[in-house]
Amino acid sequence: MSLGGLLVTPQQLVVLAGAIAVMLAFAVFFNFTRLGRIMQATADNTKAARLVGIRISRVYLYTFAIGTALAGAAAVLMAPITLLYPDIGFVLFAKSFAAAVLGGLTSIPGAVAGGFLIGLIETLSGGYISTNLQDVSSYIVIMLVLLFLPNGLFGGRALRRV
Image 1 (cartoon, rainbow, N blue to C red):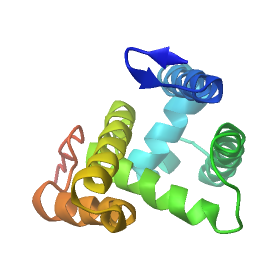
Image 2: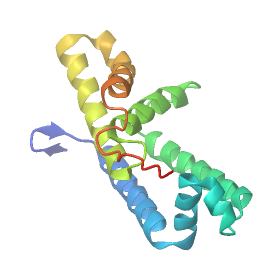
Image 3: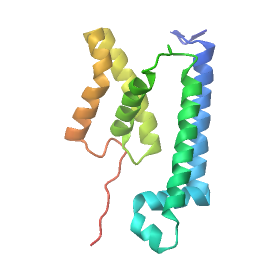
């Protein structure tokens, strides 16, 4: 299909719709459910969460289960549009980590914006500089962001009260 001069396959549209649905589900989960708030409190300050009666080990169990389900959803979404090989997880991990670092590790909208920017950077570096640089560009982005903007584009400053 041609959308505004861009060639898009139906599988890419399905993946985009699925990714948006998963992101919206996570936004609702973290903002409106009790477990989402408990997970945020535990991630922010484990000792304080334990003091108010939150079972930390149970929160870790739920976090691991949700992370595993998210990895499965990502695999289902990516399988139709990528080549499958045994090491595929590491390449996708590096790109997603670069997106999270660029957008800010504490910001879901930042991670989404970081993902779009990483894709744009990879495409432009492969098209204008060298195709060899395309695979390395996500690592270069991680290094530059950690050097010059450690909180990412959307990451807030952490407040520490003494």
